[in-house]
Length: 450
Ligand code: HEM
Image 1: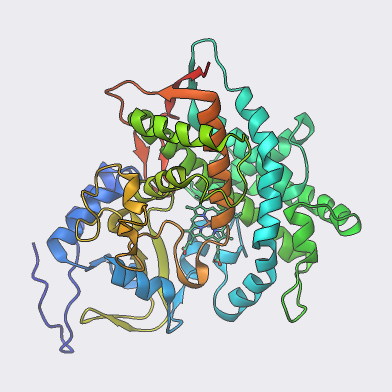
Image 2: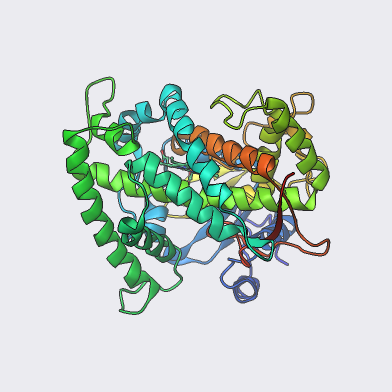
């Protein structure tokens, strides 16, 4: 245990530092913090408070806890936090120049050009377009044993939907190579060993990127000539209010990043929600009744009001299992937080996986309780930054409405078609980082309704 109120050589409060042995213990126990980040963060917060430092020199990292910290870092009113620098380290070789990997004015400029592609009328068309695909995808979810692994099924479904909505292509056998390339890239961006050596995951990811650039380059030329209703065509036509647009290279980089940002996060949410509804059959029944009452296999894009309980359950899922458990930034200038001075160059981390469970802000935070999001209780409104699965501020997820529409549509149709369960003693083993995912693929027992 260290004291937290000491003064450093310059009269400043020293930032509590996580002892090296604790950092090493967490690293080894959790395979680099990947398996269970939450308990380590909870321990640090309990022992040291809202500001905890780890590492030193160029590797200095500070974790800031709680909604005030989330607001400071994510809103970034003083424009001192770079998202580009940490995200470049994490995925820059595989997904360079995606929106999240841009900072400041450049980021703002690109986001404005992209914004019309995510406007309500466009999203409504996207969501309407995905309904029949979801319906036929789900119809194939049978197996002789009655058990399926949900993770690969959701991956397949969301990738097929993405190919159609984002690129305007059907993922038939001809585009298998594209699918493999994409999956290799995603795996490489999360790979622990980032060396371009043949045989390694990372090498396959780089190869996948080259393949995808070739494939999308051809598609882009076609969409420039004959635009369709897909996201790629819309990015080709996208213009900011001042008439600025993207060049071909920028479109390719944005497109590849968008597919990645959409794919894993949505798959993660679908798995977690499937698990929670299997563990809470009373909620599954309740949502099924709501979906049956809607009496339409294809809810409208604005079904938030039509399916309120489904929406609350989705928000509760994102609280308990935020797909991105932590968000990193690099401070480009010195800043203050709660009396501590944090130097320029520090990697600053905020942690939805911790804030979402803080008993100071949530009633019985370990409990699955979707109605905490109902207007009468609205626990998430106790502070602007207690519920942050989609981040906040300038880098707030641009695909939030798209993701919510897709998750709602898939769950709605699952509820109308199947009942699913897990054994009473089953607990989903989760790998929390870099993206929350069931380590066993989430086996569930699926029985068709009627
Ligand atoms: C449940 C699903 C999703 C979750 C939980 C999620 C979460 C997030 C989070 C936390 C961030 C901010 C990261 C940071 O500040 O460091 C983010 C950014 C982003 N997301 Fe999502 N996302 C989801 C789905 C999607 C979808 C479907 C798309 C695209 C169609 C998308 C595109 C993006 C993009 C482009 C950014 C960067 C925005 C910027 O830098 O301005 N996301 N997402």
